[in-house]
Image: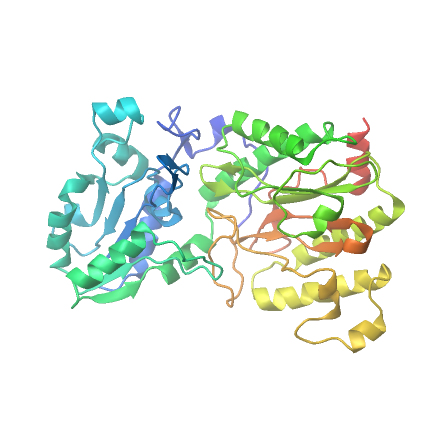
Length: 453
């Protein structure tokens, strides 16, 4: 498996069909992607089973305000449907062939069109998903009961990400409660393990979408390289980035951006972005655009005054060395736990050279929290895809087509300096991974040159 960075003009890429996806900024994705994804899921299902996937709720803020809608990534992965109050049912062995793949959608009408905008009708839903059988939501209970009468098992979907916050009840949670109450004699199966396997390996259409997100991120970085100067505010940099992202058909940031100057860069999840950037400081920027719900995840560090000090450059180059060596380890066969151990050894060597730790620290270290963790306390890589921290198996061997970040960092609060560097990498059948962000400047000398040109 090899992905080339050439020929990425949207007009030449097969996933773009037609002009626009109604109601969405991004161009319509080839429904072949979702047809294949559903077939892959069916191949993992037990006989006499069906599976149900619900869209996310629109979450309230206060009064009549709501957060912008974000589709549940699993129903999106399997159908391409990117609107609220949608349900996908997959029943491979249904006696009625029309019920082997069924979409239930909120019925659109002129009133909804005027107040909320156009929603998918049945014809448009087929063009998006490749699913021929589409019913309105008011028919769900009746038809679903018919479908359940033919099967023994039902696959239900739950957020099983290792870092999931399950405090808020979701539409899927409510549906699970209802199914367990209404159909207590059916056997319940878990969709999550199957979805984690399928979503962890990206096909070429998905890689193209992720490349698009990375290319948009690149445009944002190019915009701010000449914008950064002493006394600029972190939020002004954030504003320049969101401007560039949206004008290139992104919905915006794939995750809450980190624009952290000086000491702020030593706070790993600093998101206030409200400080003034002073001459002599380094800005750590952890930002990425989304495109068609696919995420990019980039980190770069820039000197506010356009030049790194010698110490800053030494730390920067140490982090870059760790990143370059770490990404060579992202090959089929290694597991993520073993990978992180090996990266720790590389980081230990760099911290010794920087005189941040010494052999006594290493000799006396706690094996569960090695000495290098004082300055590099987070992991190096995570899955990325439809979610910034995407789903995938953590204790199995890495496979071709998996996409990971690579983001080592060194944080020195006493020096008001934090450096992290991050790219998004596609694991290949052989050789080094393919870097989706290879065209975004990362060498310290190159960054200085661009900032001062």
